[in-house]
Length: 115
Length: 110
Image (cartoon, rainbow over all chains, first blue to last red; front, side):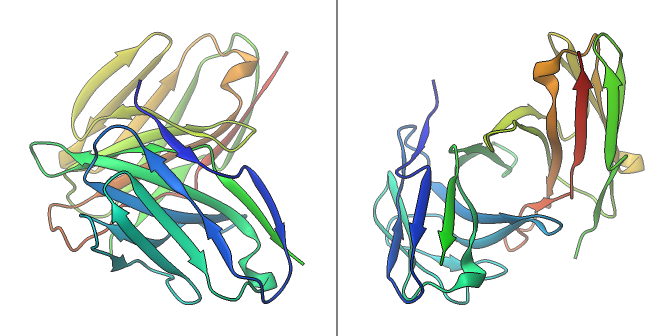
């Protein structure tokens, strides 16, 4: 079965801390994505990657960075966590269909609280 | 950018009832997916359905690409069907990102 694993289900951090959210997929997918989900705002794309060592900004990259050193791992980094980054973070991976469509598989999510 | 609207925003049904969820989108797409987010936050991909009809057990989906809408049917609802249903679309242009609707929150009463 296709699997996307997010390292932490729940995290509580303090303002100013550096936070790492890890995501690993075992499907040999090329593409990986980080979203955040907030009530009333839906899912918003933070960063994505179509290849190792490649990254592209999504709609809300400010305050975040990413790392993709290996194909299976895509890390989201909060350099200095702030309270407005309290959210549910969702990682997804995809293999493009013959038509070029990204068919997404999501991890279970990481709920981050910044105090 | 492309707009995605889902209706209704909320739906409360008795167990055993049938339901239809709708997703309208404002431009041509080459990718439409339906997801179910369970109460613990996990998003499960239900269908990849850029056009046509697919069925999986009690769930089926139809996308009419020329009229820019998709429907998700749930028959004989069970309490485990509760959660939020999202549709997401993507256009052919690689620069376009996947756009999610705001979701339909479904609550099935026992």
